[in-house]
Image 1 (cartoon, each protein chain N blue to C red):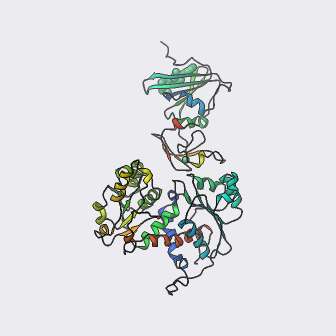
Image 2 (tube, rainbow over the protein chains, first blue to last red):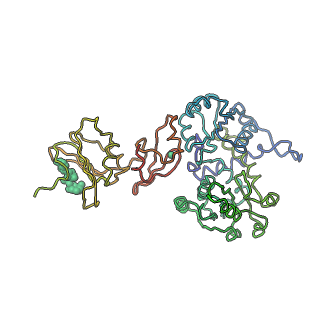
Length: 317
Length: 153
Ligand SMILES: Nc1ncnc2c1ncn2[C@@H]1O[C@H](COP(=O)(O)OP(=O)(O)OP(=O)(O)O)[C@@H](O)[C@H]1O
Ligand SMILES: [Mg+2]
Ligand SMILES: [Zn+2]
């Protein structure tokens, strides 16, 4: 069923393969939770599914969620983790190329998680590695496990079939929205693209999505579509995209998610890949609509699913 | 009147005809034919053509270019025809076909692509996504290249 040795790009996945990862994540979610959480409910369970396996985290760029959630996923399944956290303290600082680092590190572990500033780095790394490479972000390129955890969140909300989702913010440069939109087209979702004129979804991507079966609608105004959507997927609009700071403030203000806005659609859920800055009002964090912290938690079961599949441990936890 | 020859007649060799106007020198580059190779080569640039408005022609004497070595010029000259000349007659004629994937020859237009990183032992690689108009996706960064002639290595 699952033939991938490496996880490089969302584009490499068929719908069946994504479904498989998501259902595997559901099976493993119980092991992602703490055994004795503060609330005393003890919902989690212990696992040694990946006992004896070692994951190497190779991060050439900063990360909180991705690196920690891979580490947590591996450890909660009984595996171990080695880290290259500071490139200054390793042979990378001496000018070693990525290919050599991969050839070396792949001898020390069973799976490599790589974040690198160059687009395509993971695809190249895969050709030098006898162990699976998982792309955890390559420059402005792909970040497939983010897309998978976004899909998992939507699925856990029961919204994946017949989904109507608004992707909001920087749709031109945002890598997360491009690969998420691509994956959602496999599910024939209705996609509302809401962005300032200057940051619209590129035409080539739009036509690809339509061809794949998505329904695509565009707007520059959230209010116009909020009643139509079951999910708002919010992304950051970066200051650097605007030569004029006043223009940036105006645009950013227009796309901010507020409690007033949510009143227009009480059932809508709000997702965000995080980190967020001020595109979502802090008051929204406490509403029943906010899902972004749950979404980051779901990174753990999804990464557990991927690790268990790649490392050939398909049985239950 | 005898059929007009756009290039000096040759006895044996290969005539690459219907090259997209302006691309003859890139064709030579891709075929790695240059001053250091022995072959006698003539080039005609921007000549009038009924089919194409304008076109380029390349003629290589005493060398019969094989289809699979010539196919890669489809990257920049998708309408090219390869004419094999024997005893001054055209004895073989074929079109060029874009290979499914292309290694080397063109470089990725994305300066931040790993295939452009000098330290890394990696050659550019593209997957053909459309033949006409020719379009290629970088195997590494997935960027689409539309005009290959601007990205020849
Ligand atoms: N002996 C030769 N020496 C040099 N060039 C030649 C010779 N014979 C033919 N050519 C050239 O090779 C090309 C193909 O010749 P051909 O006689 O098949 O022309 P054509 O009928 O116009 O073909 P097409 O339909 O491909 O345009 C032309 O550009 C022609 O000028
Ligand atoms: Mg002719
Ligand atoms: Zn590239």
